[in-house]
Length: 479
Image (cartoon, rainbow, N blue to C red; front, side, top):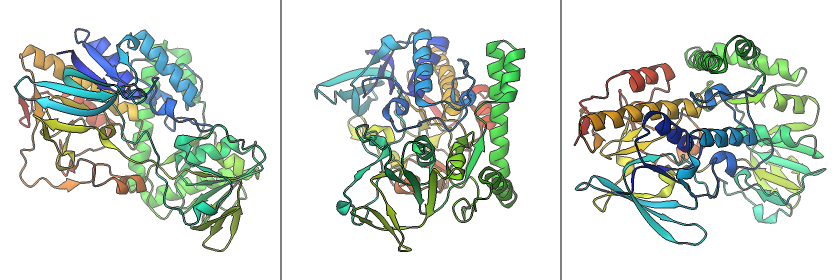
């Protein structure tokens, strides 16, 4: 056996998992395999203007490492700096091997070991590793390509066209007419970031998204940080923000019509005389799809100043010089950016097998949001959809730390979850009505309709389940 643990991916979850091992399980020998040439995952891959977190950094950062910047919502360079600091503080860097893209995992039940096969994307050299446990921190989307629909007439367009995941740095957008297709977090980030540089930027959306402005400097957090030492202050601010996010989410789910009015009133206040219908009044309930947050209302300010525009319509066809809409209106453009979402790709597309027999993840249920049924010694790191990603990945690490100690104490080599419930109902894994989730429904594992196979997207409940409840469970088999 080469390692006790192999961590897949050196992004936010992978670096966090390694830091937790250093803190809680220092006796474990681990290796991080990263397909790219640097740490950071999403935050080093995406290069589009203005890229930032749309969760506050007190919850998006780690529980064990304070966020000391004044800004609550950090840009990508600040997040990368934070990750670099964490990896140095907890001696993670020496454990990372770059240019190692995993192509397959195979678990041998006789030796209770995983064999991991990788390929170097540049040299095509193949390597293999063995370990007792896999921590899959590779994220959930395809790193090679984003989602771009088949646009009618695209071949006719004479300008530049690209997806933000592959941002073309060579394109000069100063004093150009730009159209950004999409209405999600990427679109509402790019638009204000380029608004002052371009001649005109228009966000073209088929339907609106819920958007809310939040101040980028948290006055209460500032006061708490003045009164308390850094680590205590970080804990207090983190707890405050977790509770505030949970309260807002639950109010949206329980009183959707009331919260709609509150949200629309907030948007109208930001936009002044600008008419919010139909551009900012979605026809679905708040939090049926992911909410967009704009720090200091920068997106709304760009519209109010007349630097950015919104069109709510469907795209009929591309023309030589832009886009013709279904209404007949023409949007002239030198550059068109397709901010049309991600393509989900579980486990980076790697094949999984047990004793060389293919393992079908789509037939399995997710146990407590961190293990697939019938798959031994394989932990998955997935964050929340209604709160910061890191909150759940931190809890996952805390739970795994307890599992590793439990196995060691009882001299067990494997842990596996099995469904023992009769007639366990099936639900989609991710409970959001978003396009990228619908497109991926046939390649994802499932969640059940009852605990512990149900993902409740609730930090307090997960804290109890993963940090306080006993590891022992009749659904878990130890060997």
